[in-house]
Length: 287
Image 1 (tube, rainbow, N blue to C red):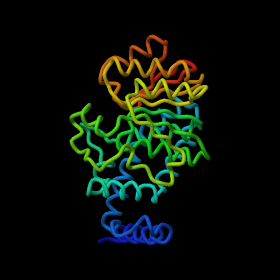
Image 2: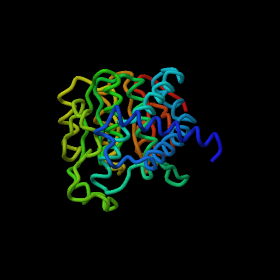
Image 3: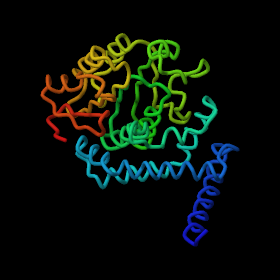
Image 4: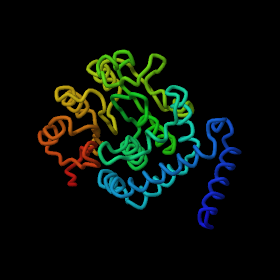
């Protein structure tokens, strides 16, 4: 080991010890030094990828400077308790560490880390009071949105999701979803005060939910990716999305729903990745 490697090792050990002192209940026996080092490695690697384009994407959507958004990204990177609790919950339900699956990037499939962190940055920058998302699933992006609301000092996230048993029936590829899981199981307990989970078909729960609010500030689609359902969600939410509000969609490559909706309302979408896109209601934004 050379001197630089030794310095990195000592710095990692120092952070580990500091983390254990500050958050002893979150560390427990699962966070040994090797696992912690692996988690930091994957996290640092992916934060570098986020900086390469996602900061600019968020800046264009929110008109907040890239410098400020980069600071939000730095703040998130330092939230060790948050990543530790995500890992604990993942191990509890899945029997393995979250880090290799969540942080690792591949050229073919990318990483679920990207949309989750992008949603965190969007919420931090836009300062929304009411956010609605469909398709909570395990709660990856949900957890990041809620952390951003906490950092903002308040807000409310309404997550619409199918009950787990119905979700498995609707999406046969979810073979990893077992009977003891529940929707948004990854959400840290201390963030649940900002969260409202509503189970049921979005064709029922989305109209019911928007009747309870005057307007919403941000919407994210990540449920059924059929053309018909995506258009239903976009058109249903559009009248109550405030002027300047942000519309987000995952898996825009699945069909032409996103492109057709943006064309119909004369919007110019901003794409963060090939599969994740957003637009504001207040005007045209060009990529």
